[in-house]
Amino acid sequence: MLVDERIVTLFKRNAHHTLTYWSVFFSFGLCIAFLGPTILDLQCQTNSTLSEITWVFFAQQFCLLIGSSVGGVFKRTLFSALAALFVSALIISVVFAIIPVCNNVIVLAIAMAVSGLAMGVIDTIANIQLVTIYQKDSAVFLQALHFFIGFGALVSPLIADPFLSETGCGNHTGNETEMMHHFRNMLRNSPIAGHNITQSPLPHEGGEEKNSSVHYAFWIMALINLPVPIAVLFLMYREHLIPCCPSTPRLLDKDELAMETQQGAEGPDLEHKEQEAGGHGNIFSCCQNDNLRGLPVSFFMIHILGGMVLFMTDGIVGAYAGFVYTYAVTPPMSLPNKTAGYLASIFWAAITAGRLLSIPLSYRFQPVKLLIFNLAGAIVTGLMLLIFYTSSIFLFVGTCLCGLFLSSIFPCMLAYTEDILDYQGCATSVLVTSAGMGEMVIQVLVGSIIQSKGSYSFPLCGMIIGCIGFILFIGLLLFHRMHRNYLTGTSKKSAIVEEPVAEQNGSAKTEETENKDTS
Image 1 (tube, one colour):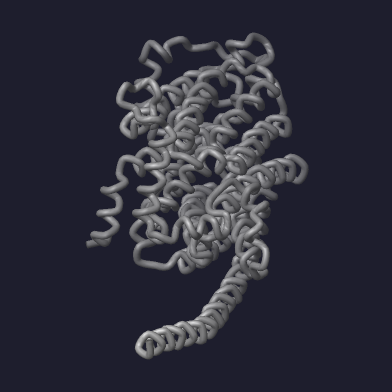
Image 2 (cartoon, rainbow, N blue to C red; image 1 turned 180 degrees about the vertical axis):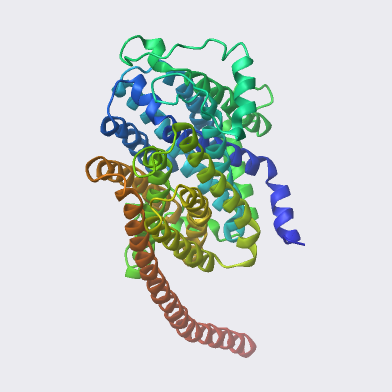
């Protein structure tokens, strides 16, 4: 069998929870990928420049960082975790529905900031819940979890593509590729797409003209996402966590029972680990934990370096997905807008395929080996994109390879660092927060550099950031070795201390027996 029976049994035992957490990550993927291919239409809708619309990315990623940082607060009980997931998934649908009426870049930024908060909560809670449920077997399930990000991110550009304008402000033209020709014709023959809008030479005149028909894409995505909050609500109903249900027990009793069941299934010392080093709470509670005092430097450096690697790699993912379309339509590439629109879909399709492929690979190979292979592959791909920067064919090939290599770095890093720390640190909260921070900062940085230095800086930035990430990963490997030596020395000292204590206890028992015999 490809997967051990024990893994299958674990999945069956927690299938409903696992499938629900996977589905909310589909919402996350939908929301993270639509900005790239629709950026020119949104720029026209809001009458903004490229540098101004870039701040919409920043607003989303900044609030995603905040949501990731505070998301751990909601994992205290099963009810609060699922309620937060339900509200967050519902918010994403609402944001999709109102984006078409955001005719000002500030209003659009506020809407994206709200969606970013929801995404951050989803990111932290879903990762924490799966790590808590599966512990050392979590690598396979984390790969599947992040596959659903890729799947949602793949669906999002495909939905948007038929509604993208050729010029950014005008309506559809006949210049289309054969791959989507039939699909677009079906959409145009439908009553929804029949309301064609005439192309206007002045994009600032008339709200309907500058909106093009891309607003239909957002409404379709809002409807597609609606089953996700319904699925979370159904799980809450199955767990008797909805107050209006007549058979619902008191919420506190239910949550206590859920926590006891989880602790019994995960091992008797899980509670001890949570108390010992803070468990998987939010990042602020981790930093304030008094029990972190006296731990070695390697313990903290593993958190820091693991977070910095994801800061770089997730930053590349965000920047590439956000600006590959802009890079492709500007010289020296100068691809047609419709053709360039497929790049985001190809990138997220590669990420989806890579995460699907990583599910069996993570069962057969250690996370550290997969990390080395993926980081090296991403650097080589970046170098090839620099060399063949005028080749539109290699841009498509390189986009596919870049997505494949970057796809499983986050779940592999999460499984690797949690395993190093024996699930006693705050790796999940730190890594999720660092990844969100990387997407926020590097997207704005790369967008500003492209605006000032030209499009060639796009692959150059990716190459430099990838090399920095690999250097940080080498540092992480060195501190892993140091931490392992520290743990080995600590266990030896404990064994030496325990032996005299055992001898003293044995001699005391012997004396008691002799005294009893004498009496």
